[in-house]
Picture 1 (cartoon, rainbow, N blue to C red):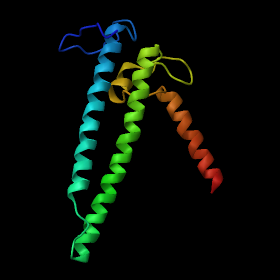
Picture 2: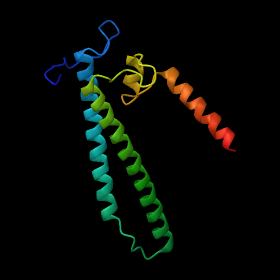
Picture 3: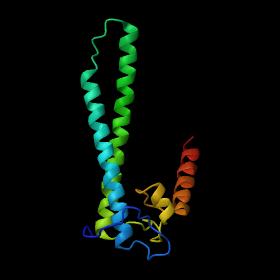
Picture 4: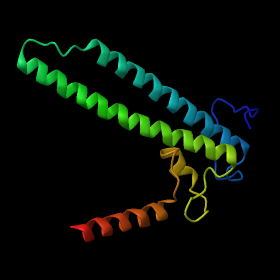
Length: 141
């Protein structure tokens, strides 16, 4: 599949077979680019954390610095989780299951994958999943 060369202006179309080699290569490149951007941002965050000193003399400055660091760490954790999802999506491209709902086996759809390339469920399955979670949360209260 990595031998597939895409034209620079290529966008997946519903007029071509779903999840053909070109579409899979398009999403593979999209996911790899996104992953590289997140890794770069993560490195920048690490560098910022190293450069920021908690040796602030003023208590307000120190509190502000600690709040900033806490926010950066939460952001970094979200990035780490997203990178795991990207890696899982890349694995699905390799095993031939990318673009299909984990729950129903139906096509997720190009528009949804374009908006959320790590999607594993169709919109309908995602909505059912969210309703179920909400019902369980309401029952727990």
